[in-house]
Image (cartoon, rainbow, N blue to C red; front, side, top):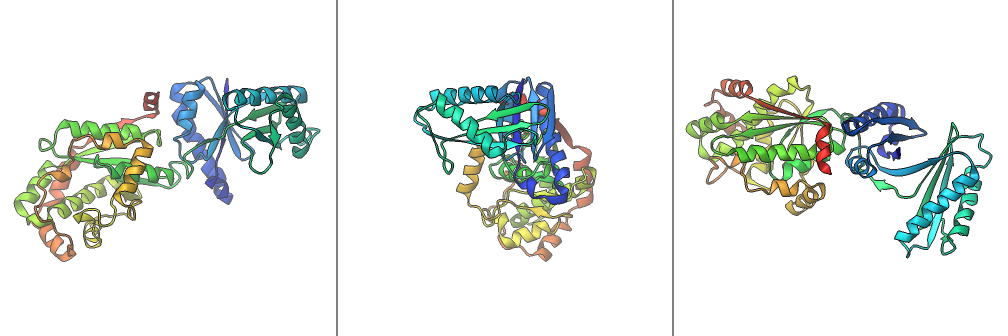
Length: 397
């Protein structure tokens, strides 16, 4: 059986609400892992523990993506017998030194949950540290900045665990602890990054994409599906809603001034999202907008489009430049998918000279030329729904 000790940081600051956040994180961990095999999990002294026969590399990969986890360790478990603990700790460090012969300093970080254990934490660390020095004479103790840190925990029920590495997690808050958002997922670079960032802040994300067939092909839809599958590593259960947008864009082209097309496109997207918000119990919207990046993202135009939104709009990328967003896209792995050369619906009937400083009175005047209610109703009646469960995580390996 493989044993993992999981730690969190921000959750630990939550005071009386902390058990609620812990419960959500534990549930998320189970949702991600159980499609791969049986998982036994429990909480102990401000940490979480999972025991499973799922291969170690698969579990480590998945835990590294789950928001709310600060870091985790693959642990080995033994009894309370001091000779056994000292011997196994020395073997673990010796094996590590074979892979890292240049490392020369270490310390033992010990904790004792079982208060009946005969040694306190300080004496326990000193005893096991002495065993390691005897077995590995090339090492010396450095309590301030060691190259190697051995973790040792004495649990109840005659259990002790030892571990070396702390592998970094995503940090932040567990998905589902900060409400649900609709993400306007275009298929470009920005919106997947914004979605992953809000997953890290605890938001459960519903993905909404607009598809303008036959002006854009099925390849664009497939690209969005690939992105959502990729982003499911942060959120175990994911819904993608694809709304038809061809009729809306054709009507705007036929009845409204060209310069306002993009702003009207975006407003109609919000009108459709407003209808979906109640269905999916959504508390807000999410976009990949960055201030001034394109014509529709000036302050004036953002105000004109957001006026149509019935809920708050989150813009986690608003102060970033393109190079920063690209760096984040590369980091989360969405970049190779996003740059596939298939356009999204916003490229259809693009105005030659788009409005950059829209006025809401003028936009509403143009919008009044449309039968918005009927256009939205038609889109809602022809939605395409895709659901992805945690089992897609098997494709990581």
